[in-house]
Length: 422
Image 1 (cartoon, rainbow, N blue to C red):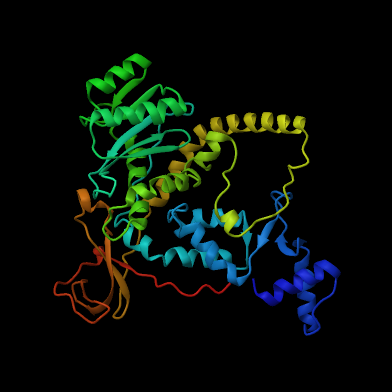
Image 2: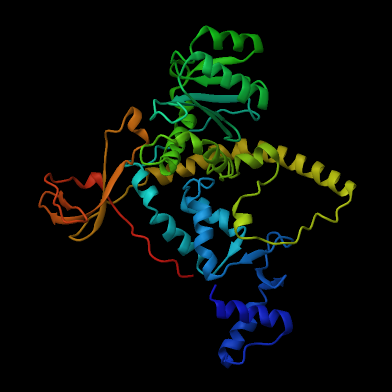
């Protein structure tokens, strides 16, 4: 928010006076706006109609860049979408035209633009689910670039109702490593699932895992023989995981395992498009406290400090019942949400037309194995020439013209970041 407006509102709400330099029209505008704000500890907050006990901090211009970074680019935010970044910010902070600033910041993120896919997202399919950790999908990601700790693989598990992920970096994809992860990170933390779903790789189809499942009464379904697309949940998370790790790993991509826990936290506190809840909330029945709440303080008033022990017990009872009900509703929501996403994803898009001087990125289609953490899009390049057959000649930023024409299907616009001016 503009500092002049910010401090004028603080002054008016504190002692009903206004700066003397304001015009009559400006004074009237401040008075109209003041009904939506309050002052706490000399800081301006916006009233929160959804939760009156948690007013929303009004952000000054100098604070916007830090909030955008912590809510999108920080490893604990993991470069998620415009909607998710906006959701994280809007429940904590306010400034005028904030959605536009957030949209422009995310759309102009260099890492996101260079890691995105070249195809439409595949439509989502309804998945048969039960209670939390009734069904768990598991998969292996790798080989990836070998890290300084010697890790080359990630074993991943995703729970089908809450979408809660677990993952562990591994030096190999041996059965013993996978079984240790399944026992220590799934069973010992979350209890025995009724069913696990995996592919037919030898890291999953082996005597060690089979014996453990038989001993604990866990049904082991193999995706290729059971229902090929049901393990798509895990495969989609794998892509999200690799995209996020790639954005934080160094140039040699040999430190991706350092960021694994941070990326998992970011995903667990990300609202899932299908369930409409964060996995963290559906698991624990409460919202996680995010690092951005310490980077730029939200409300400093803790309304629960005066609660009695009985108040706390009552609140726990209410929250427990609420989250159980929401888990049940989530099962019904999933199918409806996926159908809406399917309609959006299947809608016809018009081909993008470029003109000379436009900035574009070039898609690299052949990335396999250890290259998976590399950027999928190269550039940016300038459009140097528009050819009659719909292809384009490209030019690097330093003026070198690429020899081969490029089909438009391998190009997408590149958005340069502008200064944030709320």
